[in-house]
Length: 293
Ligand code: F3S
Image (cartoon, rainbow, N blue to C red; front, side, top):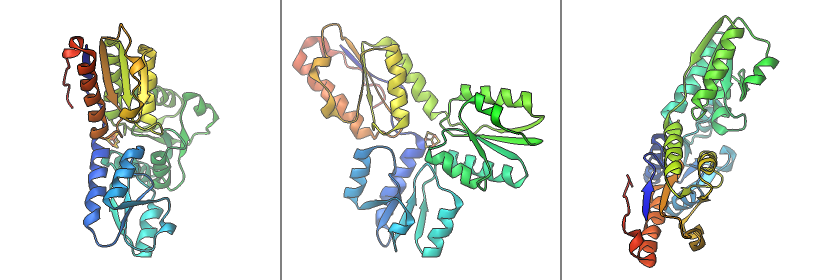
């Protein structure tokens, strides 16, 4: 039996950076708090709390200390409020998200009608909306273009994790409707890379294990995509959820992947459990591929 790790899995650049920034904030004067969970992973949030980094949902909840802006970013008001309250602000906004925020701001300043392509309730999209001076129209599907009365010039910005294919469809449709369209391609390919690698692996193996927060949209999406290719797909948050009954006869290869917000140590725990099962199940399981753990 083989255990194979997806070529691209786990923390993306922006999340890795944000977690490191949060961990380093412990050395600053006063207590540090992330504004909202640093990532959509309850185990990581708990780990940070144990290291001394708290979490608040609003600046109203703190009187002093440091506030850490997570990778999703926030609107300009938070920066202003932090300054008014005399809080130290540590900005862990992912540079790709920052680019999308600035694009929305500049398009709005230049008089463009701004359209954000993304999920309305996603914190990143909300932050991009606020940087557009609360003027942008947020759409998720091409059909929503039918409800918009367009200006002469339209600027389009994408949620960084939006599907490149879907975004292009919307852009093509917009170009047919509006003469002057400025497109800011603010999609980051980390999600796409993880999805492609997961689907490729799900096609090859007998069983897929997808590790990550049940509240993580990108991990849930990975699990959905894998399930389409492989009916033996399980979405787990931690190693404790692995059920020995999954390993029936006929399961000879196991693929592992993890969302962009899943820390390495959770992936390693699952991997080591597989190693233990190898010992338990006998010689068939000797061939373990290390992948890029
Ligand atoms: Fe940044 Fe892309 Fe990750 S936008 S937070 S590197 S998914």
